[in-house]
Length: 247
Image 1 (cartoon, rainbow, N blue to C red):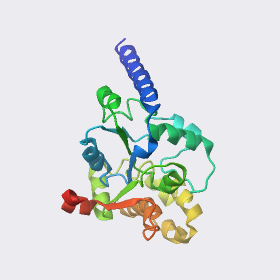
Image 2 (image 1 turned 90 degrees about the horizontal axis):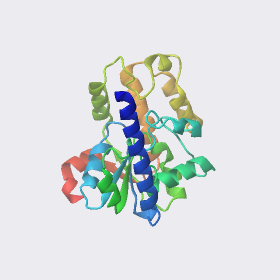
Image 3 (image 1 turned 30 degrees about the horizontal axis):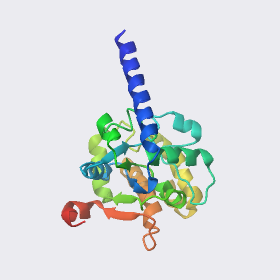
Image 4 (image 1 turned 120 degrees about the vertical axis):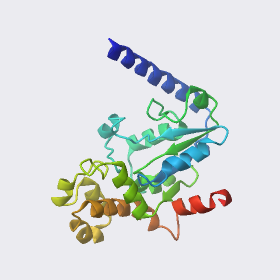
């Protein structure tokens, strides 16, 4: 009985949020949306919280999180989807039109903002991890501000990941040690399709620290390889910590 009541409440909240999102999105300009992206444990949450302090800002939390939104897998999304800049993917285009305009509202994506915040929203702050591989495509297809890609030193990121999860858990975001020991898993194979020059390196990855390092490198290579002509604003985490007031 209690489970039924809780399920009903959850459904009602999701429907209410979706309706509010639809109403508020009608006159919303996507160019007002701020996009934040980075590796897990790189400071994306902290940066989103800072933006949330600005009057009128509402945070859309992890709209590509597959476990909380399983319908994304049906569309072809993975934990680290890579979309080439000139890709023609109508389902992804429809999805991101919903995300960037605030239509993709549910209990999960609205976890950092209540009903009042959503209703009084002036602009959205969309917070991702594991989305660096599609940011170039995003900027090619939507009139958004350059996304903010926060990059934190790999040793700090890996230490945080290892501290937060036990060695027996999937500390590499849905990639197990045995999968790597049998050869690079799906997330690495998708990466290697675009960057085959790294195959030899990734084939040698075996230990947990090597896996986490490889994942960090793959996440951020999409960004740093364009550092001379960036399509994003590259924000070093350490610079934000030391000189945040000047930024």
